[in-house]
Length: 288
Image 1 (cartoon, rainbow, N blue to C red):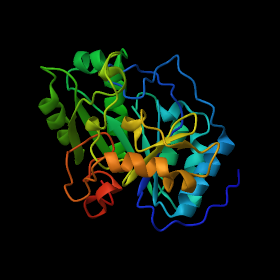
Image 2: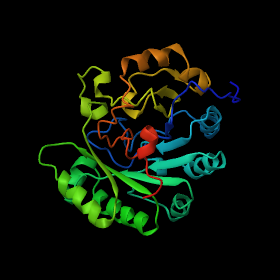
Image 3: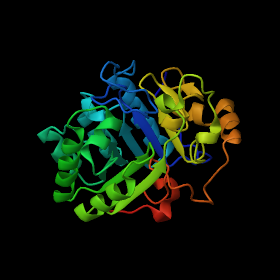
Image 4: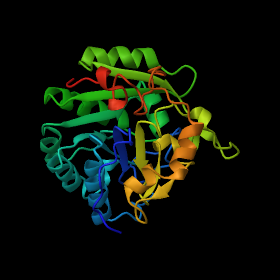
């Protein structure tokens, strides 16, 4: 497959989520990607991901998000961030912030790099009930504070997973710490949260995927966002990204997902929120 991709002005995608790995040190109860400690990095090689980043830039998409799983567990994350910056792309790393190697802090401090994370409760026991990771609350909170200390642009999503969860208290705590960009979302019936008997439905999507968002899985599958993995449209290991995004399968799924660009709703912490991502460019903050 050639990596030379011509610009496609008909593509309105503003950001691509690159799921570098399905491996994660946590095993969140509501995880839409079914990530966990026993999962793999998938079949996408470093060369495959480098090619994908090149194609994102050549198509004219302005931003890439490196996500997982937990992207800091992917050994080539620094290489891909540097490559994306060399291609003049904006970069966001969506991490649970439980483990940040010292070298990564310098990477995150680079111009045009942002961080995003999830936070569930000011109560450590509640937070860890959701993440399945003992000590995850303290580690995430400490690294969140460190990111703020270093002046790294940061946004935080809170997902309301169960009744009685201290969501309001978590938001208040984050604001006290100095986090300015926070969004609260309901849990989406995707992945573990869907349960084994649930049928895939576009009703769980916010409307920005396939219209302004795209995602690439650890195995190269392309879909509208990490929440829409049940509706793949192609694979970048077999076809160019431009071919997939302008192909009939993409158009078919996009037609089934109402375009929410004019509504700027719902407030969605899962990377579709207009105030926190490029999905609604005028509202997207340039700095934290």
